[in-house]
Length: 255
Length: 294
Image 1: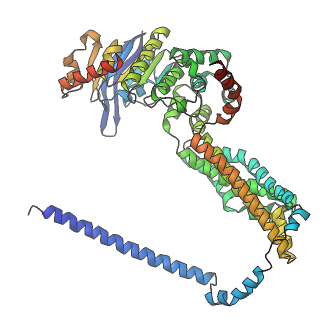
Image 2 (image 1 turned 90 degrees about the vertical axis):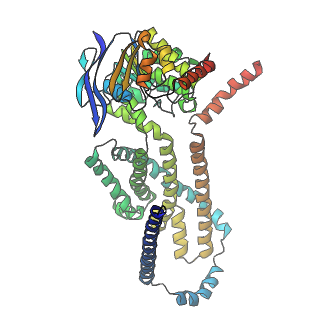
Image 3 (image 1 turned 180 degrees about the horizontal axis):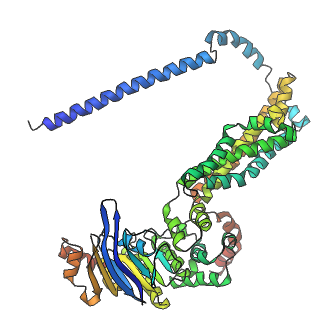
């Protein structure tokens, strides 16, 4: 059984077609990357998978069940972190456990010991154990995003979605965040689906690739099939030379 | 004819400008007319004020505070009662202000129903604290308690309204994030929304507390106790030096409350580090130890 199955998914916002008859399957434990330029439908696809957006047509199945609303076993990492700046990294991570904590306990911060340990473990996974008591709002962009990942891990999901998790980060932090995402998914055996617009990062970390252009799947395959022809089709019309120069620039920063 | 589109655009701009000037002129005329009618309604008369002026200046000579009265009647104790009315009234008002303020937000309660809560707050606001005081007289008499209840009831509307407005400003991101964790509706509201506005809620509450202390002074003038009542009684006795002593104490009280409140508010706003002060105190021995070990 595949962890995620998308069948003829179509989403229209008024006149605009965000997703046009999208179908694919992601088997359990795969680290899949959704590629495409801004506005190609990546966010809408991920939001349909975790039930934040309802499709116009078609269906999404998670672990074999049709998705109707957001569910506990699908966690999401957002582009803008969406962590709560006024709370510590630890408290933010703990909000991942809200789904299994009753109201009074969560408000009085009387979380179960197992969840507290889980929150610290998740912060350890993203390399922030030492910063657990720091206010999230005072952390750097990359650290905030890692807190977002920790929160998603505390949720103990089977599926980890990330919508452009590194779009607002510098190349160095992008590398770090992607490394922690990949590491966490491998360590916990999660099925991951990450949307990215940076091809170099995608090639570096991805296993499986789904390419979107104008809401349609134009590529679906594995690393060895992701040729420059495919990239050209995805990012049609860009200057390849400049593009490759940019890629070298990135590896200089991080290498 | 290459400049014709430009000429055309210029003409258009000139026309819209002209229309705007006509509208401004109409606005000024309307404003002037309203002011004129208002002055008639308040029986404004410059000549009366001119004739009365020497008498007023004469009266001012009596307005020299009798400093001894402050000690004699222990006016600072009286101003303590006024402060207590403002403080207890604010505290009593907070729970309902918070509840109604949150429920009044369109993002918590769906559209037509949130107006039930906004309506309740509206009534609480529409009736001034002075009138609430009169309404509660049969319950607690001419006493500081009636004044406290009046302050509490008007706090519900005033503070609740500020809470509701503040909640309109919260960003959707953390709310969605809480939804995806599988949080319940109330958990989403508390963690996704209220956590974003925590510091501004504290700041608004302090602001309303400032306002309430001033209201408590005026409630005293109606017999609600405290420093206001002293001023009212001394005025009735035509003992102006004593009345002025009371007013000086009011000045001290209000300025002190505002200074403390504004200090805390600016601290909250600029720093936004809630545990900052506690960290500073608690973390002190640790930092000492750390620096000693270096």
